[in-house]
Image 1 (spheres, rainbow, N blue to C red):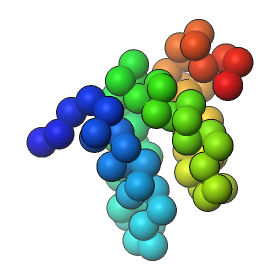
Image 2: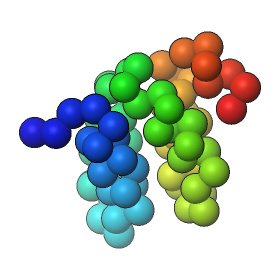
Image 3: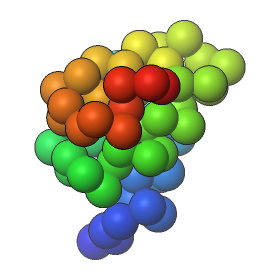
Image 4: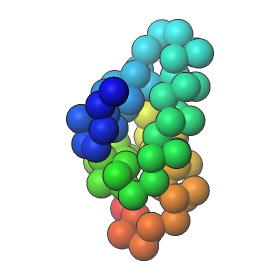
Length: 71
């Protein structure tokens, strides 16, 4: 099992999958990763895919890290 930034990047890519179950699982796991996911999620706010941006914003709000406020 991967950890850290590579895992977060793979999960963000999984948000673009056509299977809603995979999208949902990736979104949930990203929210559970907390601090590890903050920077990649901030980057994902600029993604071209609307769903990816939505999940990133929602999970950054849940994590509550002050670095994400400006993003």
